[in-house]
Length: 114
Image (cartoon, rainbow, N blue to C red; front, side):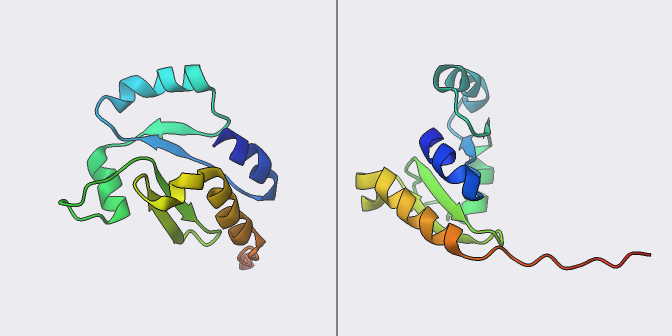
């Protein structure tokens, strides 16, 4: 994902990483030290991730999980590790990002000065 961030960052992409496995708070610092990602990386509780993803409690989550959130903060695509999407992950990620980043940014509303 560091290569993706490097290539697409100038166009407005921000990659975020969140570990939610057991022991994530203790494991993330070692991951950061080993891989030195060029994007923010942290941890989250498994329950919070499941709630955000709106997965029912019985649905098993496979990692990695990629969310593509557009400039309007809408989840446009979601893929998890068992899907064919990951058979050619780099190419597929680039195709999705290229399409999303071609979309215009939302127009900021002017605020009235008092």
